Image (tube, rainbow, N blue to C red; front, side, top):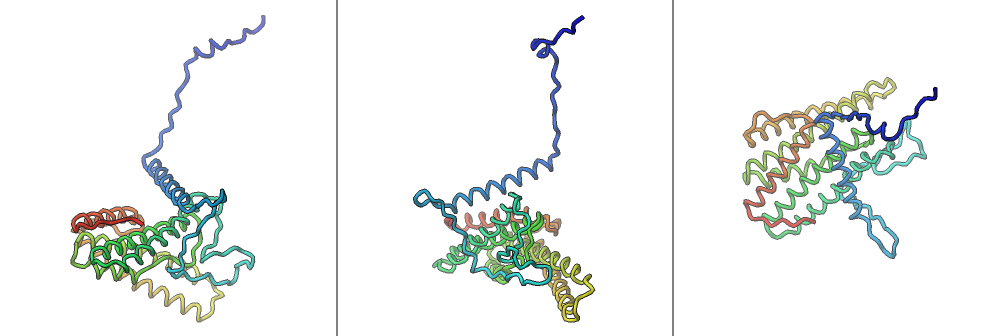
Length: 281
């Protein structure tokens, strides 16, 4: 007896199972966060492209006003390798990392622009407003640099405009407690993250048995400097808790994202209260 072939109608009558993939809330949040980063990078890239006679021209932001030490060539550095402003690119195919890296330079450029505009401003409130915007953009630049670093970029130096941060603290001291507190909170987190990375690198270097005596002394000095800076960071953190009237603040690198949002809200609230008409560049 010949086997009867199934018809299309018979197949359609078979109930189909619905496949449901459950993703945790944390995974979905992380995916949305990555997508926002890529979207922002795409938007910025589009603004940097200019079309002249149907020929696209890309303009790299000028970052010469932020000193970044060049990488010193030493052992293990290939003379033919491509080195660009302290960055050793080893993940060129990762679009997410490239986005963070590009945002890092873009945010530095914007911070510098606001800093220069504040210096030309004739009113005290306008000057403070632009200085605050520069402050927030420097923090954003550091945040994006850290994200690129965590995902595979190698930086010899990390952004640390500490003197600028301190001058802003003095400028806004006594103006608004929450504003000052949120800025000091950001500053404390950045110092702590900066020193954590430096300590980790120094510890790894110290494991090298071929180091000279001078190199060992330099590492010890650097570690001691990190300890002093971390103490300074904890002092800033304690001041921030008092100013923000929040003794439950956390003090880890993971807090940087939320701290940036809070600081931005406090800056905007201060502008509204003072009647500052802020114009974006």
